[in-house]
Structures are given as C-alpha cells and as structure tokens.
Image (cartoon, rainbow, N blue to C red):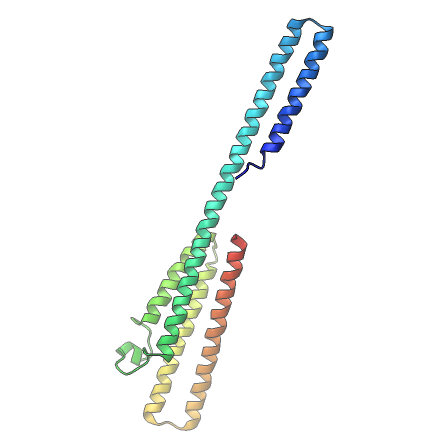
Length: 212
C-alpha cells in the first residue's frame, strides 16, 4: 500500500533544501565561506531533525492504523460468528416446533414444555455466549447483544410452554373456546419471535456496515 504521507514529506524536504541552498548562496556572496558552511551545517541539522520527526510521526500513524484494522477485523469476525449462531437458532427452532423434534418419544422436559437439554436450548446458549463475546469486543457495557439473545430465549421458553398447554388441551378434548385462546396466545408468541429474530438480524447487518 502506498504511503499517503510520502508526497507531503518529500515536498517539505525539497522546499527546505532549496531554501537552504538559497540562503547558502546569498551568505557566500556577502560573508566568508566559513560562515556559510556553519550555516549549512546548522540547516542540515534542522532538516535531519525535521525528517526524523516526520518519519516518527508517519510510523506512529501507520501503527495506529494497523491496530485499528486488527480491531476492526476481530469485530467483524465476532459479528459473523454471531450471525452464524443466530442462523443455527433459527434452523433448530423451526425443526423443534414444526419438525421432527416435536414428535412422540420426547424427553420429560420437552413433554412438560421445558427447553432444558434440547437442541434449541443448546443453540440458544451458544448464541448467548457469542453475543457476550461480541459485547466485549465492541466494549458495550449495556450488554445489548446478550440482552437480545436472552429475549429470544425467553420467547422460545414461553412458546414451548404454550405448546405444552395446547397438547394438554388436545389430550383432554377441551372445549373449542379454550383451545382458541391458547392458539391466539401461541400466534402472538410466534409473531413476537419472528419480529425479534428479524430485528436481531437487521441490527447485526447495521453493526457490520459500521465496521466495514
């Protein structure tokens, strides 16, 4: 990568050299050569000091840029890992509630509407860990991303219990009114889950755009 400070640095050096040469020529015409040489040595020392200062400043700027790029790269990796964990939650959620996980032969916890030990619970815990890492990477003291993951987990837990209530009503052949109320509650939870999932994904896209 081309050094953006090089043109300005060399222009300044050229100007100083030309100025020194002009002064040296003028002094040589008026004073003795020894005085001109002393002036030339002094000017050379000033130029060398300015050049070293400029080089040190440029090196410091490049070091800061590298550190910023490394930090930016780590943050992007954390964002991408969070997106992967979120996709995993979404996939497992669909399988758990609408696919093969919600079938006869479930564990006691699943039958009772609990997520403990289920693939969905494991994927949600993995998302929480990744969100905690993302919060630490961007130094968010409010734990915004971890709170987002916890909200998703709370909705999933509520849905599992609501699904258990639906199964209980079906097994007891409850009146149609009670089942309708439960169905509406489950529909609200499904909508809440979808809305928070989309919001989560959208916020990650915005954060990624800030660090690109």
